[in-house]
Length: 175
Image (cartoon, rainbow, N blue to C red; front, side):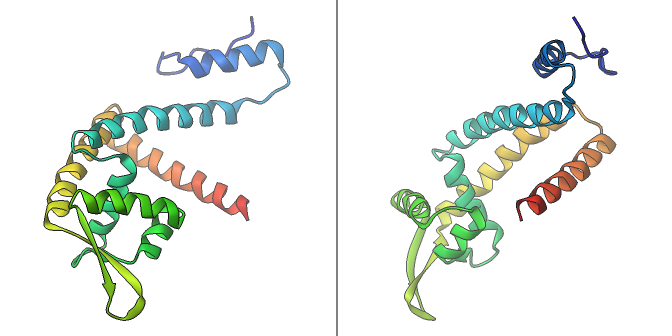
């Protein structure tokens, strides 16, 4: 069996096993991209599940968290148009409407007419929504920080830099 050398950190994971299997049956493949993106996809799934759990403690989904967090980081008065929210979160208007309906029923935000556009609406965090998102952001950041704690500051900064570079390159390729 052809295998990759043991990683420098001594850890061997499922992605290493997959790459080794491909090396056995297709030694002509350069599997570096598979190693990187296999781990990125798996990390995304693990962290997505952890974040979903953190949000569930507050009675919201990750998608609903994203709406509330977007309103919160918009600054006082924590108000945006549904169109701006949809664009920021890369959601269809239908998807956004469903989230807004649920959050409004829960008393976490309110929709009101836009005073500058008779056809438009504004979405604003309520005090209850602001209080909830403050706690949920802290909880979510704690989950992320705990996962990141396996890296020292320099490694975390380097990883962030490399992921930014990779993301920019992938977005450029989309055209």
